[in-house]
Image (cartoon, rainbow, N blue to C red; front, side, top):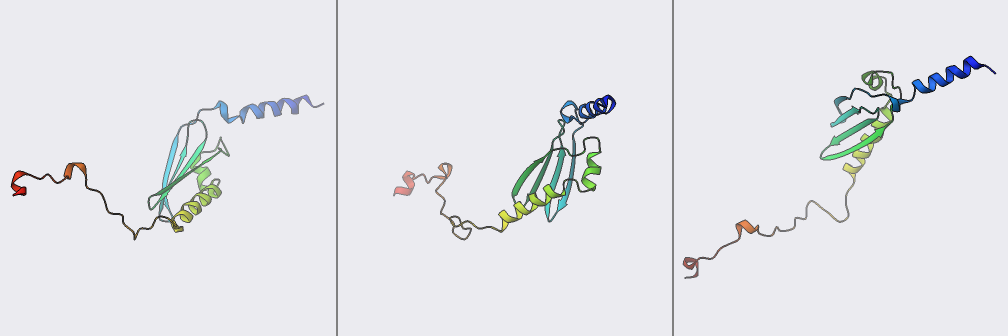
Length: 126
């Protein structure tokens, strides 16, 4: 039995337990495929990635993959590219879909607002 290796594994496990650390929140914004991409590192070590395009917004959460690497460095090395690609594809899929119930070319008439109701005065009656 190798006591040194067992001790080393125990120390490594404690060092890699992300739940014990508090991270400095960071946010990186950029434009991707004509939409706004916001990547946020939270103080608990989780990563949230927001993508907005043409009024549609979606968000995905990711686990921190390399907790001792700068968040900016992780992004530049493509650590979260798979999550970002899924997010962009999901928003684009929504934008390219059409509802069978709601159509922009059919506009329902609006009812009169209560504040703009026609008030009939005595002068109007005669």
